[in-house]
Image 1: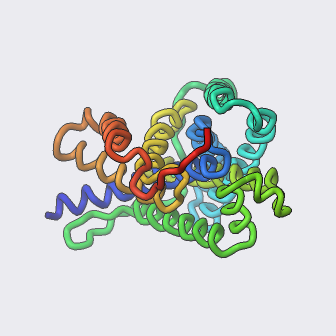
Image 2 (image 1 turned 120 degrees about the vertical axis):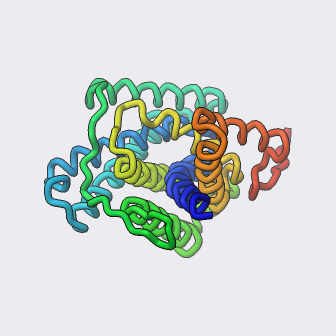
Image 3 (image 1 turned 30 degrees about the vertical axis):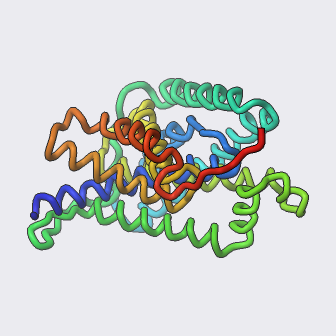
Length: 299
């Protein structure tokens, strides 16, 4: 029982990271109805921004809560700006083009970020500074690390903040209106272009936070680190119901727990395969996801 609880805790830690990345996919899809496949690489950029900010402020050699908060916020702000730039430069000019064109552009932006990352950051892996000391705490025989506490705490805080932003603020109401019907929202005076930019900024900031949290739990970072987690987070978004914010959160947690349980009780070689197995099953049995709803489109 203790072993299962330990595996469950590890799965929830990874699942919360997947959930943060999946939220970016689902928010963009909810507003623009396309998959931003460059989102996983924004997560990678967030990890590297945190790496350089941490070295600049000396967070690795002098850990503190203030330094950790500065690194996290700096990375989130930097990626929020990057998300807005990507939207305006790559996606906005194609707003009225077929979705396939935008999808191919998203793949191109992903490749651009990956290769630019290797050029700017270097292709060799880097050791992420541990600006939060690693300590172990035993609770009922289950070992909880300080990094897991930080990951779960920050993830829950950000997800709760996003829910409050979307449901309780005027901008969040506008975002929901644009998601429901963009043309009608525009006719009602909502600045749809600005709302779309805010959507990219918020989603990219959450991906950056995920990159920082991953750096704490898995200190090796490299320019291609966003490829597989980005695909898994996309699976999590589809599992929960693409375009549904609570669904993305639930899908990320389910995927993280499933990965760790399969790795611990069946085979570690199946850890990555389980995500795509879940994708096939969910597409065959419930294509709209756990919380998604089918939509009727006029043709």
